[in-house]
Amino acid sequence: MPTDVATKTVLPVQSEPRSKGERTRERILDIAFESVIRKGFAATSIEELVEAAGITKSGFFYHFRDKNDLARQLLERHQSDNEQFLDALAARARELSDDPLHSFLVFLKLYAEDMRDHLTNMPGCFIAAVTSQDQSFDREMMQMNAAGILAWRARFLAWLEDIAAAYPPRREVDLTAMADAVLTLSSGGVTFAKALRDADCIARQVLLFRESVRLIFGPEGRA
Image 1 (cartoon, helix red, strand yellow):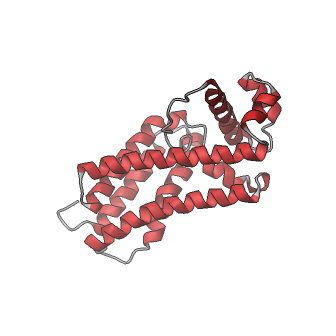
Image 2 (tube, helix red, strand yellow; image 1 turned 30 degrees about the vertical axis):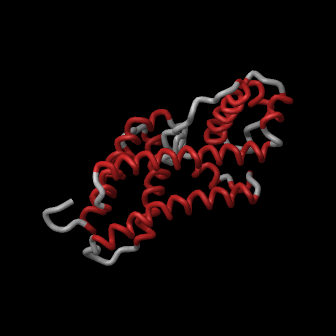
């Protein structure tokens, strides 16, 4: 939140741009990303992006049809970065254990460690910025944002359902709410961390959630 928490809400996993044009586009997106989080989309002008990137206005419109197209490309990149990041962590966790519960606990530990290491580089939570600035974006943008959040839910809900099948919970639990908690901890954690200048904030919350998962699903003496 991730990102991203978010590169960015979570640490981005980006390949090196292959051409000068791609590097310029990425530069514009980087500048716009931070500006949207720090002062809002409406307050971010094409003119200031052009000046900061050291390009002409026609150069901007070579890469983006208009400001709404810029917003959509920002969100697309952010969602792609998050997916790559989560895929990589999940793959690593499953390499260490093929048990659904144990691998999820490993994943949460890895996620907490990453947030602790990289939170200082995050200007804020892009998902929270888009959601709170809904009147500044068009309908397509808000639908994309909602779809991205639902994708987070689906990813972790499927994992939790596998866990529940193998380890029936000790008490009644809403698996959808548990799946949502991964994103809410990340997004809300960025806000707390930035306000309190506490880089460990998200890590502590994720590890507390991890302990809750262990207590709900883990048999006595295991997990």
